[in-house]
Length: 103
Image (cartoon, rainbow, N blue to C red; front, side, top):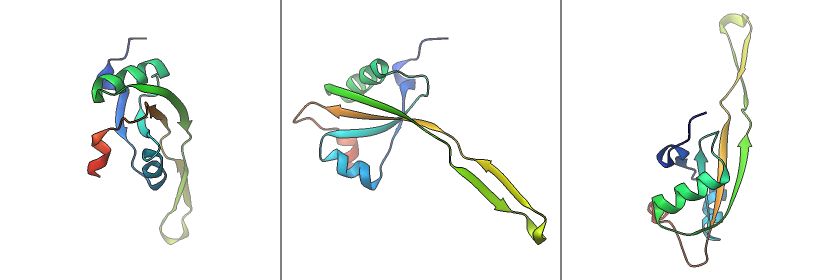
């Protein structure tokens, strides 16, 4: 498998109510490439945002089941959404990422 570039590791920041609460504690949440490991995520955050990272926690978010009805009682279509990988990055005390402050 080819090595991931640092630009490809972080896909997007995740902004939710819980993540906004975590930002006050110095923890930031990102959606990352499914093949990225903690070392690659740490290096990508440090170089992209010029901060020092203390810890990285990762988890795979399972896809949600989806279903919808067809017209006139013809039946139901079932499937699932897309799964993704989440990384919660803890920064050193006194540091923050300005990208999240604009939201």
